[in-house]
Image 1: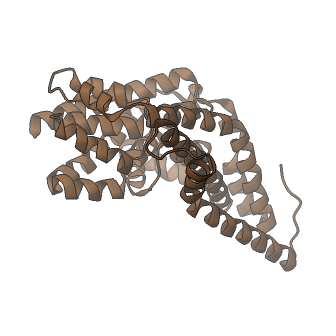
Image 2: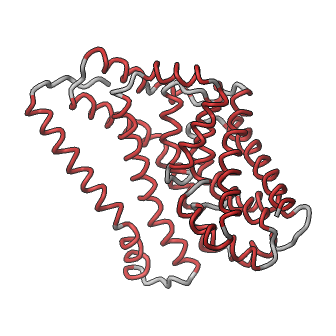
Image 3: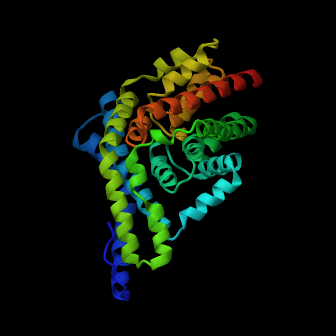
Length: 350
């Protein structure tokens, strides 16, 4: 929907004030989510922080608004930026660079963005809408949650620079290689049609031609945010609900019991166990440390960590609204196999 243009300076100033107020409220809400979640679960409901139900509900009350706020903020920002960009030229640059360079660029961009798997989805949608090749967008989607600066620092402190650098390089390689494989399979027909129907690339092109006002640009961003959130919010809640249950009720000993064995099947078992879970890289490192303390090989523990952050079940549930089941299955298979191979290589080298 194209909003009517109101070109006067007063109207643009009012739009800036309104958006600035919304950003201020967004920051206040986001920075106080943990305090609110703690108050709701531990004070208002009287649950114990060490009880399974308390831990699960606290996780749910914190993560649902967190992910929805991140989704709304990222979709709004991406759509707003796209009104200034001729995405046809961006697509031409990426295509001219070729698949390999494009995948490397996307993986490196993913490595420096501090997003979990669920909050990487808006950027993934934005890349697809802009006409960026699907394989290149997957390189970003895979690498962004795997690589985390906090996780890198924690690995550096716990295991030394060699392990931290190997983790960094392997995460980027997984994103590049898996993206290349997925890109060569020509899977665009398995993307849900609505992703292509929301056309920020057309908005960006029109902006360059008709000089949209700030009210027009903000209106386009609001429309896109509302449209996408209306399609994915229920999947976000279901996915985080599953993650919260596992977070509260699946004991750490169950994980270490499965992966504490240095057997041939330990790496694929670690990946399979990690897929239903939901956490960011920094959050799962204490579990990795516990696994290593129980005798798990480093490659096995890191394969578990990568599967948790790159192939979480909540992420798959959210992606289901964007991708058709066959593409999700192919995506999971390719990434899981890449992680398994990486785990075996770590175990052989270290």
